[in-house]
Amino acid sequence: MLKNLILIGFMGTGKSTIGRELGKVLGYPIIDTDARIVEEQNCSIAELFELVGEQGFRETETDLLRRLLDQRLHKHIISTGGGIILRPENRKLLKELGFVIWLVADPDTILERTSRNRERPLLQTPNPKATIENLLNQRVELYRETAHLSLETTGLDFDEITTGIIESARYHYSHLE
Ligand code: S3P
Image 1 (tube, rainbow, N blue to C red):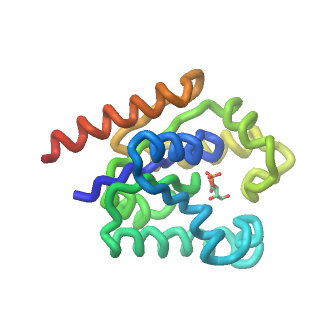
Image 2: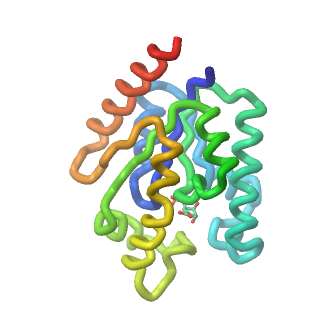
């Protein structure tokens, strides 16, 4: 049983920030799939989308997850890109890698958090709010299907979210042992 904690959820739901908090509290190293891809490919996510398209980017996500599982990664925090759940293989790999937590936020909160930078190619549209709602509609069932736990983050502070995740993970693993 691989005891990694994996954060999934839409862009702007706080995966990277919560990942860092969890890493501090648990003392686990953090892997951010976007950051790892940027490092390995030596270009930004936006550049990668331009170079290889969204499907090419999804390939690199799958390849990274396969490698993390192959190396039997253990006791790490993995925060993921918002679309990582789109491929069936990724959903399976994520569940095999550990305890999967889905961070949920409403479209207005997501819009507010993501409008601060232009690093997300999928949201560079004339109407980002509508784009967010559309993508959320397409993805919500996939997040649900992949996650062991879902956590509404709107209105909660980081401490509350982190504590909730750790308690649930302990319960999850105690039941599996
Ligand atoms: C994406 C989310 C981004 C990044 C890429 C695609 C998506 O990650 O992987 O821009 O499809 O939702 P964050 O969720 O960390 O913003």
